[in-house]
Amino acid sequence: MRICIAGAGKSGRSIARELIVHGHEVLLIDRDPAHIKPSSVPTAEWLLADACELRTLAEAHLESCDVAVAATGDDKANLVYSLLAKTEFAIPRVVARINHPNNEWLFDQSWGVDVAVSAPRLLGALVDEAVLAADDPVRVLPLQNPQTVLLELRVPETNPWAGRPISDLQTDLASYPGAVFVALIRDGQPLPPSPDSRIGVGDDVVYLVSHDAQADLLRHLSGRKEIKPAGNPDEAAAADA
Image (cartoon, rainbow, N blue to C red; front, side):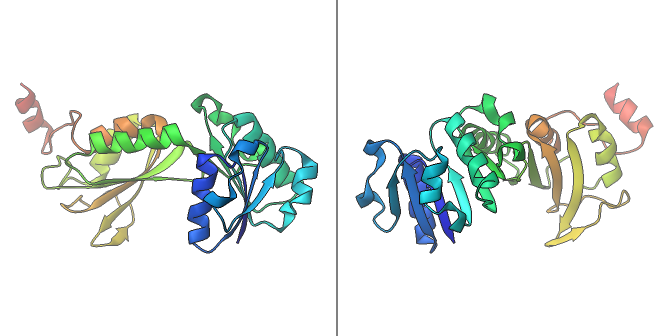
């Protein structure tokens, strides 16, 4: 594929090197002469110009690219470049870097962005995962919608949900409007979300969850928040007493 990257700073050059290793053709565009360092990525094309100008992108034959990447340190520039790439040159895939989390709401398809990448949010999710999942293996997969992730948690023997029916989990998590149960994975095979199925040790519980509810849901699924004990209601009441 041919990929055009707007922004030849450290981030842009790092992305370019990675793409070239995987066999892609890369064009780097930047208006700052200090960022034009052909020796740092010798097999890439380089263009000293403003990627937010229509004439520049036409001269670069942006229409021949399969992917456009907005990797500058300026969110305004990334949005303008993304919009031009999508609306004027019909680039199939536009990926944009978000520098400031407060601007996330702007990076959507109305600005031509197919995939928005926020370094602070990704780093925060990784730290969240490392802290909250010290005992329980957790995988968090960002989706195309930057507000949603696919969360998968493996159930160890010590997890209080082990042995309980899925219906208990669904009922208990009704207070999490930002979470949707997707599947139970057992022995590598996804099982449909039947309320009668019981969660087994070693199973993976898979959820679609919003970023806002992610940390709370992780704590709950891993037993770090109080949950009702399994068994009949009378026994549970006696235990509480």
